[in-house]
Image (tube, rainbow, N blue to C red; front, side, top):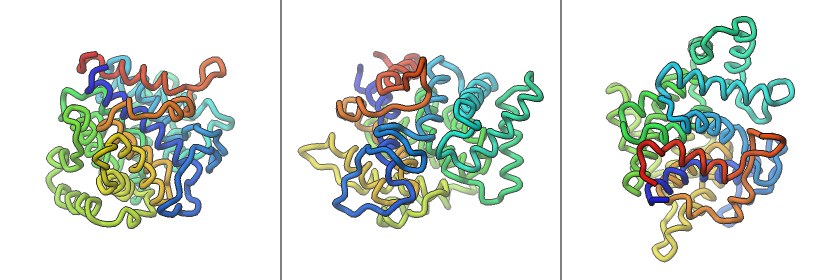
Length: 336
C-alpha cells in the first residue's frame, strides 16, 4: 500500500481497535492514569474479548457501501446505507443489537416496521423522515451515534471536501437529524480527509464547511478541546462533548519523538480514561488516529483480536475484511 492508502485503511482499522478497547469500560469506573485498557470483552453487550460494538458495526455497514464506489450523498447511496443499518438491527434477537443507542434504535425500529408495511418505499427516505420527526419531538437529540460511525464516509469522498461534507451530513441524518450531529460529522470527516492526504491533525479544517452562524460556537468548542483537560469531557453522549473528548485525547497526548508510532495507542488509552461512553469516544478518536498514522501501526495482536458484526457463514468480520473494505473504498481516488 502507498502511505496515503495505508492511512485511509488505518482510519477504519483503528475505529475498530478503539471500539474494542473501550468496550469493557463503558459507563464503568473511570480508569486511572496508569491503568492500561485491554480488549477483555464484557461491557454493556457482554462482548467477547476483541469484539467491537455498535460503533464499528454501523461503520462497517457504511464501509460496505463505500467499497462499491457509491456516492454516499445520493439517494441510491443513502438507500444502500439504510439497508445496511436495517440488516444490522434485524440480525439480532428481537431486532435489537446489544448496546444500541436508544435514539438509533427508535429510528431504525420504526423504519423497519414501516418498511414491512411499505416494502417498495425507499429506505433512505423512510429513515430520514423518521429521523426528522424524532429530532422535532426531542430537542436534545444531538447524540454521538452518528459521529461514532462517520470515518468510512470520509473514505468514499477523499477527492472532494465539499461533497464529503454533504455526504457526512446526509449519512448522519439517517438517524440523527439534529444540525449539531451533522456538523460534528462534517468536522471529523474533513479532519480525517486532511490527515490521510497530509499526515497531520487539523480539527479546525472543516469550520468553513459549516453554516456561518454556527462557526463561532464550534470554534470555541474546538478551542476547549485543544486546551482543557481531556477529563473535562465526560459525560460525552452529546455529539459535541464526544468530539471534544476524542479530539482532546488525540491532540493532548504527547507524541514521543523516538516512538511516534505509539501515539495512536497512548491516545486511545487517554480517550478511554476519560470515561463514560468509552467505546464510542475511542472509536471516534481511532478514526482520526488511523488516518494520521496508518494501518501499519496496528499491532498483530490487535489485528488478530478485533472482530464483530456482520457474520458470514457463522464467521465474524475481521481486521483483514476491514482492510479490504478500506482499500476498495479509496480505490478510485488513491493509488495502490
